[in-house]
Figure 1 (tube, rainbow, N blue to C red):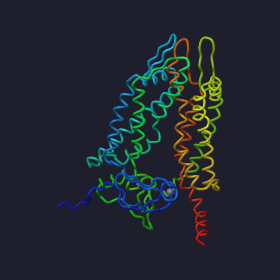
Figure 2 (figure 1 turned 120 degrees about the horizontal axis):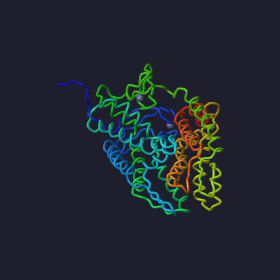
Figure 3 (figure 1 turned 90 degrees about the vertical axis):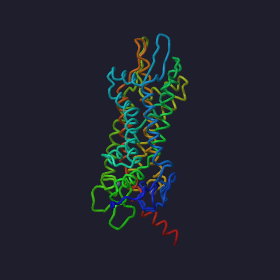
Length: 426
Ligand SMILES: [Zn+2]
Ligand SMILES: [Zn+2]
């Protein structure tokens, strides 16, 4: 008889202990069945979740998304008609236009955020869930899971879709635009990818992989000599340097979190100046050449009566980056020196900062769409140098938020709240 340890597969998560990823508070999570979630009692951060159809939903969404990606990238995206000009645009055509005009960096950024990363996300999802469904431990499964989890932040198909709507309003004054099938399919793809990113809870995935490996059950309970892995949230002996469940480096708080985050933030702050002072878009026709900075462009649209577009571009290109840089400064100061806001507010500020950053890419995507449309002898739109600086500002502030460990805020505040409780009960 085979005496190897082979438990019956647990579909949900058993009762276990873990430290909240948002504030570090140790707590007990009750047994979770498919469709159930647990939230932190202190900061409301999601602690653990099991999707409703935990094994089948993500790969089904992944497969559907792959088909949609293939269609979105081959079908007609939009066509634009104006006197003397008729353009039929597909997404590969947009990338080709950027490459042909020496804006290789923008082409790579657009291709990565709207095609490469979503594609890789679907493929890694199918690989990991394929292993889970067929109960096979596949080569490099842990490594692929780590990649899968990280890619979630960097998919921007939904941002590109909204950018198309903004570009359409801008184009609407001079041209007649018509959407092709790829545009509508892109909306469906955005929804599927968002749903998919939501339905892959990494804590549960690592638990399932650990069950597949069959050697030992995941470490579910804390002891005096364990440390809770920050990535998979299972306990590991404090003497280890790497987690045996997920393979990540083990630490209580992300090492050098504040200095790394501050370095990214300072770099973003420096690049924010040329991003605003230099021209972001140069448009020309036989009579006039217009060189626009971000603020010029917004003021021009406001005066022209395109107030909605002006407000959207202002929010995405000015308000979001500025508020995000300020929020990160407040968070870093609060973690390092003293809290500037109540701790639940700081936790909320962190969550908002982490989630809104990618919407700043709207302006860049709008310029890419306009540029692919206006490229005749008569009228041309070309990105200015600020476009590349602005892209870097968005990416750097996103990195600054990702590298910031929000548990540091609570480490600083814990004594304050304890005192409060003591005073309360006295
Ligand atoms: Zn918490
Ligand atoms: Zn781990």
